[in-house]
Amino acid sequence: MGLGVLLNQRASHDSLPHDLVLALGAATLCVCVFYIDSFTNIESAIAVLYVVVLMMSSPILNGSGLALLVVWCTCLTLFSFVYGHGTSSDISVVVRLIVSLSALYLTFGLLVKNDASRIALFRANSNLQASEARYRAIFEQSRIALWERDYTGLREFVLQLKEEGVEDLRSYCAENPAVFPQATALIKTIDANRAAMELIDATGITNASAIVHDFIAPDDNAFLELMTTIFEGRRFFEGKGTITTRAGRVRHVLISLAFPERSEDFNRVVVGMIDITEREIAEKALAEARADLMGALRLSAVGALTASLAHELNQPLGAIVMNAQTLDRWIDRTPPDIESAKRSIDRIVRDAQRASNIIGNTRSKIRNQPPLLENFCLATMVEETRALMEYELRSAGVNMEIAVRNRIPPVFGSRIELQQVLINLVTNSIQAFEGSQASRRSIKVDVEQEASNVLISVTDNGPGISQAVRDKLFTPFQTTKKNGTGIGLSICRSAMEALGGGLKVATEGDVGASFQMRIPLRASYVG
Ligand code: ADP
Image (cartoon, rainbow, N blue to C red):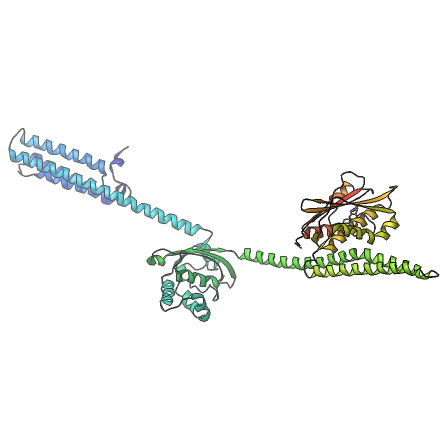
């Protein structure tokens, strides 16, 4: 606490010599007034001049300081009065005293009021300065490229076109490409931060307003959209644009700006730009990699289809060879057994027909066509499958039993594909018996309805599936067989899923294996 609390803010910081002169002047005047008032016989209200002392002190003192000075001047006035006039009751002397004091207090009141408004003005001004400084700091230090631009000219140009009857700015600009350079030339840069200057490789330029908008690509769609935003009276614009920097580099930027509500404020619009070139390059590389991958996948799909075709054709071709050999034997007999030979020929025709169906089905897959869906009886299909595999079953010494629980309604699905799955499962079971010691080799096929599905389970009493094999059972190319391909089960599962059904291994223990096909009564192909 000291003299400082009585001084006003401005006086304590600025123009000290000037304030000192004022203070000395006021003090001298104060002494002079006191002297004349107390020790001379001038009959006038000389104490009124304390008002001048007060006024001279007002730029230096704050409210409290002035109050103290008023009290001091009052004391001096009263002292002079008592000293000069004693207890005189001369009315004119008393009136002069009252006039002097009134003038003093009136001036004090006015000065205090004036000081309060001055302080309010001073505060508002410094708040404004602080806000401007904050804005400048954000503007300058931002890592986002920021531009302050004057869009007044562009706005007038665009609205002029509207007035002239242009209804669709986009098609107008497409027909009149000269509009672009004309329009970009109307944009004025007021300021740009460091990031903006770096973005256009213009760090050497100190005066941002000297920058011409020649870095916007002439056919830049974002600029057309920006013009359209003004044309349609919208306020917000965000778009991806391309700019060519002073060093000739092409950069992709995300532009964002908000136009002011009032047309007169179009002279100061802040535009933000974020360099997204790296992201765009990465996205492009990703798209290319994706396209390469699709190509590779297509190639591998062709490979998978070839493998699948070889796998599926193996069984009917083997059967054809086997039936042809049998046919040969029937004919070689003396006399030839024509009836048996005819049965072998029928089987050869049937198997060849099936091979042809498999090829047709694969061709549809390559063309991305759905398989042929038809209404058929699953129980009959299972019976037919047993007949088809009669030779394989007999040669492996396997007995195949079929149990159809309750009456199964006809299903709507792909007969060929479902039969292929069943053939695969039965073939796997037959192959599992190779090297197995099971005294009675049997495969049981159960057909039953469960809600809107039909379940076909293929269960054998072979060696079963170990946990390690079971974990990768449906993974392509996982096989435990010497000549296996490991693709049978994965093809079967995909075929079942494409028909809206499923395939799972149902074995619990290590004795035997059981697979279950789930077939929806109405297949809807999702391949
Ligand atoms: P592949 O028959 O060419 O090996 P699969 O995908 O059809 O290909 O079968 C994969 C593996 O699943 C087989 O190698 C075998 O180890 C096992 N597997 C499939 N069915 C059975 C089964 N009924 N009993 C035992 N193991 C089986």
